[in-house]
Image (tube, rainbow, N blue to C red; front, side):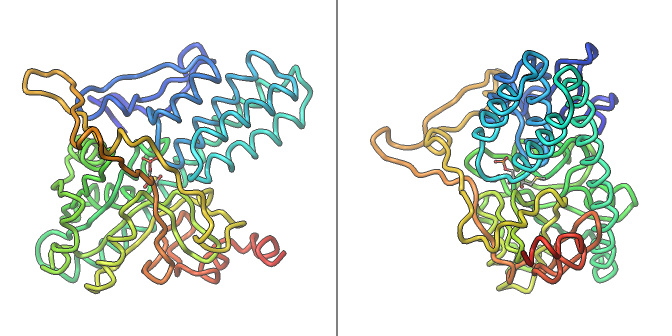
Length: 366
Ligand code: MRU
């Protein structure tokens, strides 16, 4: 994507070829800033504090975090300790485990002197692969928007939750990839952007991205979606997923399930866009997935910009009231109309997924 006309990925190697630059998402939408990751600890903190977030980007950042660790110490012990530290940063997005397992296998297969080069090369491939996957998701998903456009006069209204745009990936986005593709192809569309409390990834990040790209959109409170669907003002929903189970259940940002329920009740198609590395083939269903619990302060406070241009955090709840802050929920496959992947559009079921990823058949059976 371009920011102020300059092409930029959400993560990229710095000019020194060793440190890593990220778009600091905690500053958006009020400021656009780049942060530099120079150590394993920087990378782990960036994931934990959500300066980078979104399943594919977490995986890419962990891959580079391992590079930064190996730069300091390439021994097997250092590689294993770094993987454990990175894996512990956030529990739900399976891309983190996927990227670290892949990186670890490749770097430990070569001798110590070649590990840094092997790690940087593979991290770059993981990033390029993510961009290619997202481009294919866009191509496969745009047909659904084209069909919806053919059925109605005026703009196609798409509802999305959280941020599954280019900021959540290395570039291109997952749920937003078909939307960008359709907009660029001249399809008339409008996006309802769920604010996505408590961290406001919709209001702060998705809205910022869509505005920067010129895609017509409107921010709504999380509770408005059901009403809009009843009113016939949503043609389809597209969300992302942090972990897709082998049976087609999807785990995504808290509140996704309620949107899928409302969509089902109103006959609104509910699509989930995902890259292959988001599928956890070891998870039979969503019943046992690790759901991240984050700090209560994300619920009891809110951060924004004052009219004077100052960034302030204010309290919303009584200081004495406890809060509970689960980060994700599971949408059962039966509520998902279809999965949009880099290999095509599939039914949200074991059969649907295995038809697209036949190489997983043996693993799934065993
Ligand atoms: O807590 P976050 O902001 O990392 O959650 C992100 C999401 O839930 C996204 O929808 C998901 O990672 C898919 S992004 C391509």
